[in-house]
Length: 372
Image (cartoon, rainbow, N blue to C red; front, side, top):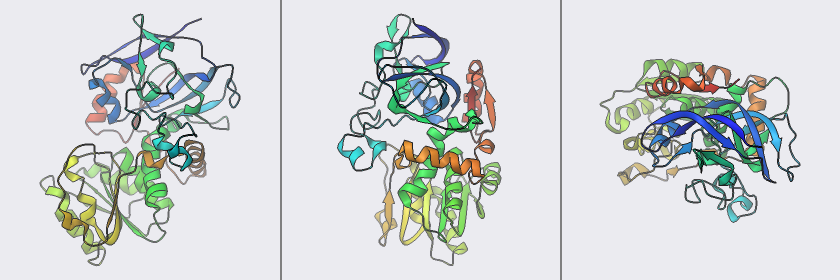
């Protein structure tokens, strides 16, 4: 029997509507999740212009409502976090431990059209009588999500804050994993974080958890720098909008660190012109990490690589969902990782327009849509 689900639907032309989609019963390896909360990020707003109708949303947490006949690792009522980088565990990259760039299931690596083995059967979600894709194989801005069981991570315990859990599956994981999994930041080292939005704040938190001795946050917004201090930055630099490539900020970093530059620098601005900026912040043989996922051609002065500097561009913090999500929740429950404080404001689905406005104006560290 089809299930009606109130959903945010991108119409492909820069707009969205709130309407009803119809979900089929789960197939053998699928699960129906009743959504409790869905995080918002700039990717969700970008999806308005992907040129096709989609059920929006790729961060979320909820409770399992129905199971397919072949699902054995979950039960109805389980609390779960949804993961958009669905691993198959069989391809070359998954076998190498790179589950975040699965060659079979990734909606990014496998072509980005969502019609991959990791996607619940496309006929399972219909809008206006036609099949509709779910953003990043999930579509979390909906009362229900029909997904593969491999897209879920069970979270034990009955006291889960779903808003906090919802943001784990993209922004938190990207920031945390870029430090812990990708850069493997060494205790006692120095780090610079460029951009103090949701991802940048999680980079700062991960640097603190990893034992960084100095964490220097850089932003053009004084309010974001205050948040950076609350989340673990030891020093802040208010950058000038006219500081091309943040070269002046880089000089301040070197002054703070005895003229040498930082051991690590993390770019979290998503501004293409700042793609090379972390290279200017680090010492010789330091590590620059491009966290925000810039995907366009930019020009880099190769002298910034002198000498022996490393520049890495990890996807999704090299996420291994079944390993990393429980670790993040454990750190959260211990009080080492701030998630409740990251959620600046909660909204209802009908208030999505306002939530997007607040996102674009930089009012929130993280905004979350909550469901009944």
